[in-house]
Length: 103
Image (cartoon, rainbow, N blue to C red):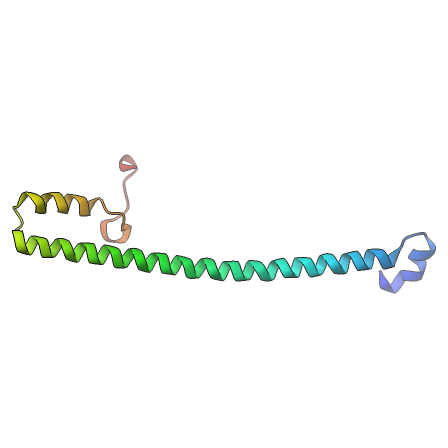
């Protein structure tokens, strides 16, 4: 557009206004892209923190179950209840994916 500015202006097209508008829109797009990159990084960090916290909670709960089993023995009523609860926990990696009939 700049290379043919005189021709376009002579034809009644205000190149200066359009160039200014396009420069502003380009800057806005670049700013939004930068914000998206920051948001993506924050999302990745939040996901990692969430996964770590879930793993820590599961590990601690599992260790607690094992401690209780050791104290009360495996045939105690409370141990059976706790083991059933542990089987229902959400850590998919440890228990496997739910079957469609379980959802």
